[in-house]
Image (tube, rainbow, N blue to C red; front, side, top):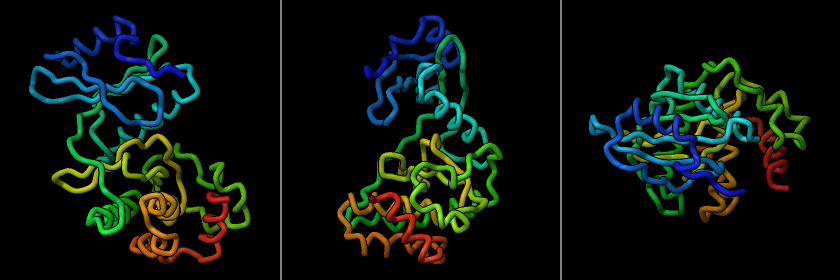
Length: 237
């Protein structure tokens, strides 16, 4: 699949964006992201920067952009501020305040991990009860199929990010900021921490070390052991 570029957007959509933001320089591509969409940033006449992402409206991943837009409209201040959206003429377009920051280093010995885990715990407090009524239930998530006997332990009323990894976190002057909310679900708070464990293993920790660090998040520490074990088996086998 070829990733579309800024020039692939219809001219009238690019003109609408230009009329809205008054860019003072050409759109600059932004690396990263797992969806094959347009990703650019522009400098506006007011001196601010805007991050724009766009994807064909009828593609299989367009609804992820719509979900991300809906969650970023919440008053809870999740992620960068959503400035405007377009869902027209075959494209879904999202425009955010460009967030300055770096991706955290989650490898052993890095001080970033503790800050990220503390931020995840704080996020769960902020997002319980779930502020997004249309969030799908985590028990319907495909990764839990093999852990069906533990569905009761996975039910909850927390809005889960479900994709917390280094490239979806920006560390700025106010601490970690979580971006890319397209895969969010409603469920038990410990699930976000459990989904981080494989990411920590990929970052260089042993499974035992990864679980120990995840237990810094109270919801994971208090989760039923049998449910955690069944879930771990479901996402690693």
